[in-house]
Length: 446
Ligand code: ADP
Image (cartoon, rainbow, N blue to C red):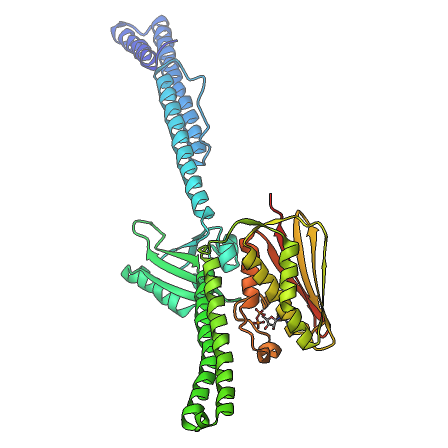
């Protein structure tokens, strides 16, 4: 159809014609008046049509712009007029399409960033200059026990009223300083809070990242306990040896050979205990560091169990404890180090005899089980307090009542590490005053 400009031009031509007719007419005959009025009407109608077509197109574009402003980026204008506004419709649609793809790209980028931050085990919290939480990543649930929805929009101090951290936040937002603190949370949980100012973050002014330090702290504690335990355990026999030597030197016992022999025997017992402890410690650390070059040979468990029981028979007899052995005839072989396996079994039987009073009994058995061999040592001895039971495999653990039995507290730790180094596991069951059962399972050789 006609363009907007052509229509306006036509309207002006008709209006100009009306003016010319009115000017050149010599009289005001009705015919002249009719022609002028008709031309005016036609010109006015043409102008009105042209203006209303612009107004219609402008209305349609305004409506579409409003929808885009409200976030409906899929809006497009179709069936545009064939005049100049047809081109404007096309440009508008191109702009809307570009806007839609820009917004989609931005929101995809944002989702990726949020997903990456939410996948981190560290909790990330963003704050505005008033220290109000404006963003919190998913890990706050695990580390701080609150969901992001619960804390966003609330002051940081509500979530963590820790004076040091609050002070760090002020330093960050006012002086742009970074800081880091270790804070203790309920249930002996430790978090490192790292506070950094956000540069160019608009309303976001500080970032706090919480990193779980519980495991690191636990390892530090275990190391400290270990050093304390070793020192304590070494001090006792060393003090005993020192007092024997002092008595011998100063007390004149050297002049009395039977007394001197008795003192030296006592010192010898303590030295033996020290040597055993140091050997067990070395063995433990070698197994743990994977340094122990364990022979990988087929081991007949029936023989290993029988030989361990034989070695301890005299000790059981001395203690008045009945030691019985009950092994299956056909046991699968296991792959490993015969010496360390036998030492582990000796440790279990030795404990069973040590913690069983005269008249009691110790039963040792080995049976095929679950694709491997189950070695079981049960006694009718003192039993273990329920609160001590989960700790018996820890290094240096000795139940209070067992202290006088004079062990090192390392035997069961060695048993556990030996079993695990062979791909097996251990467990203990006990009922106080009735006895205990220790089980060691080892996988069969392939
Ligand atoms: P220890 O050298 O003290 O025997 P272990 O590591 O072998 O060290 O044992 C750790 C602790 O476990 C013992 O001190 C004792 O309290 C407890 N325990 C181990 N075996 C038995 C058992 N058969 N009966 C009762 N208590 C036991």
